[in-house]
Image 1 (cartoon, rainbow, N blue to C red):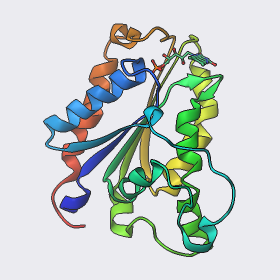
Image 2 (image 1 turned 45 degrees about the vertical axis):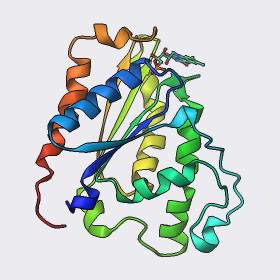
Image 3 (image 1 turned 90 degrees about the horizontal axis):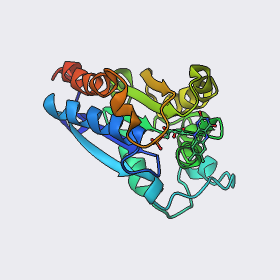
Image 4 (image 1 turned 180 degrees about the vertical axis):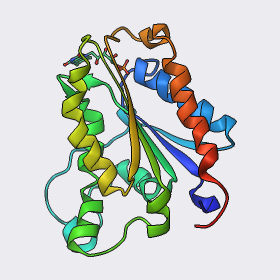
Length: 202
Ligand SMILES: Cc1cc2nc3c(=O)[nH]c(=O)nc-3n(C[C@H](O)[C@H](O)[C@H](O)COP(=O)(O)O)c2cc1C
């Protein structure tokens, strides 16, 4: 992992600042810090990230024409050695804030499959890691099944092959995740595991 890529991109998509997915991602970031890996964090729900317009301009030059806060996240989606997305379930899918961000990754799809480019360096892509964090109120783990293709698509277009998820059902009120034995520790453990990136090239 090159030094410039040796950091974690932490995407907080819940509008609840002290909500369950945010607490899990906080723990992950803390764990990464213990492993000497810094995080660049974005509060996605507080940013101006508009939905994709489907204009297909990115199929011409790989750029998104919308000049909003997504422009600040794009370079990190290209460079970060690890990407963690924390998004709760709203109306049986990931929250709209996370979905808007994923839809705006259409420019990565266009760069790869229309323009034949490599928006993420091949060496980095081979070693990049990802984690999807989610919670839902219903005590029904199958709720997360519908998120899987969308999250898989997200990690695919930003070229993260090695990704995993940590999801918790039956967690509703803000902060309830603290009562789930081992949940915050598990997230921290994933962060700490980034220590294993090693220091060799690429
Ligand atoms: C608008 C909205 C829609 C929700 N829809 C669902 C749902 O369809 N299924 C479910 O199990 N929980 C649903 N929930 C509950 C949240 O998934 C749950 O409170 C979760 O812990 C929120 O995570 P957060 O604290 O990180 O925001 C919904 C909550 C909100 C605010």
